Image (cartoon, rainbow, N blue to C red; front, side, top):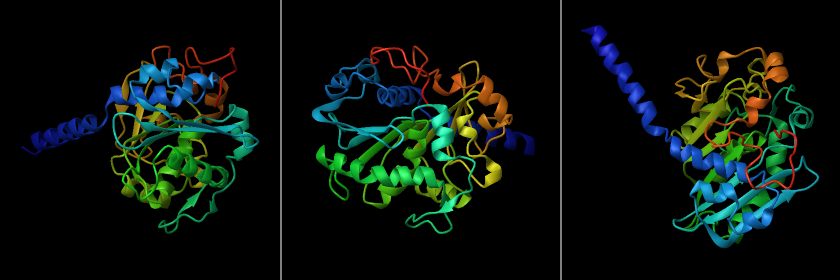
Length: 301
């Protein structure tokens, strides 16, 4: 009898886990995240670029802003007001390349205390936090321009991003929620770890079912900064293996998901391609969106 109850409980957990992950919705957000890499911006402003159209998410004409924070790690974000529903979309692009990611953000340094509201004992990576503070006013100004002001009737936000942009997604969710935005379902792709266990616990409590953190095979970026420096991922992870099948990860640093791989040097040497690869996209490449690039570029991180 006990065995039967255990089997039924396990089966119930599996059904519950799959019930909150919508792969079709994840595909939409993967396409949105790839829009950040588009170079033909006229088609982003008119929302006619290939990934814009393929996402099935409609943004209101004239209410799209693309902001390049020149001189600071070539960061970019865009915002847009939803056409068919209340609220806005916020998407962060990844950094220039993997080596800039390593150098500019010095991922091997210990965490530093930062001023996070309502987060006692929280530590986050100083590089990510400085970048977010640099961009925060621009983000909030752009959101207000397109009609999404904090504490208003249209304060609903969905946030997404890839790579460094995924890490910014987690910080932005936490901070913008405190500043009066209602954060809805958000997806991050190939995020690095942002902070310590206290930050992860506070984040998970604030967003128990609002974020899906997607990882791919042996991509090295989700393994940075390393756990031994005190960093911990936020929940909830959905892991795609080499076959392109996904697994719902029940633990924060689930040993059966991305964290099953531990040879970081080997991953950096042989599996950088996994970072831009996405089984959610038809052409499989997050960093080189179809119909969006002026010319072929090197892999972005």
